[in-house]
Image (cartoon, rainbow, N blue to C red; front, side, top):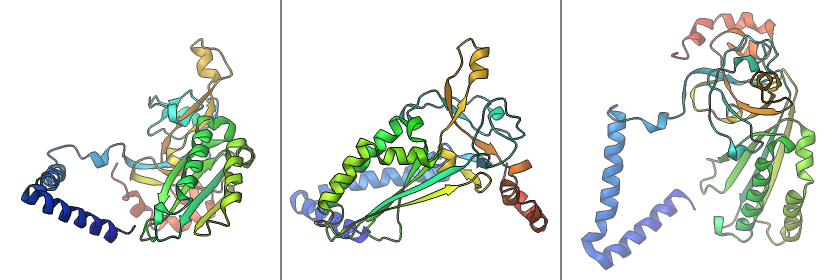
Length: 301
């Protein structure tokens, strides 16, 4: 439903409550609204902590693909979290200094970007026939992929709702993956094929449901990103596998294991300072020098 439909539904329910309870029906919404207004005014006045700033990195950073610890690096880790689990859902935050995992060359590894989306074109919206079932199959696929991220090459995923669709009836998930072979492996695994079989059985009966995907194979050196005062999102919220043989040998823990690292990297200078450097387009740096001082003032710390 659109926002106006939700507001009208709320107004109707409030009218029913008024007819049953009279003025007392105004107490709950008044108390809740007053609490929220006071809460946000206190945050705006810097009296209480601004929760909206939680997990933001107050600097300029870039997401880069880490390598093995033996790789020489000139970048600096801004905030790195690690985990030994193959499952995204089980990873915890524990930020040690891991700048040694990042190569001097930006975009040192290829990536696969995969968009998976669906839209319902039906007056009942999310209550349309088949929409709930589609969501259930999608959730099972996502659970299966995140539970064995190493096997399926999953680095990260984020979910988006299309704001130009007034009813919020189109959503998309953006996946970052290690390579296409791993994605293809998942596409032909039992969990995904069960969803394909269900879709093949119902597609004629549900013409109001649209599904789509887009796949982009991005070569090394052909991608870049920048974030300023942002929470880790998109590729910056992905987890990357690295070898920890060197570290584990020093700690007496054995060799041959993998560690997953999520690491936005300091991009205030050096190889990550500008788009031309992040893409290794040296011939474009002269153009960027004209506004170089302006870009250096585009972040506070």
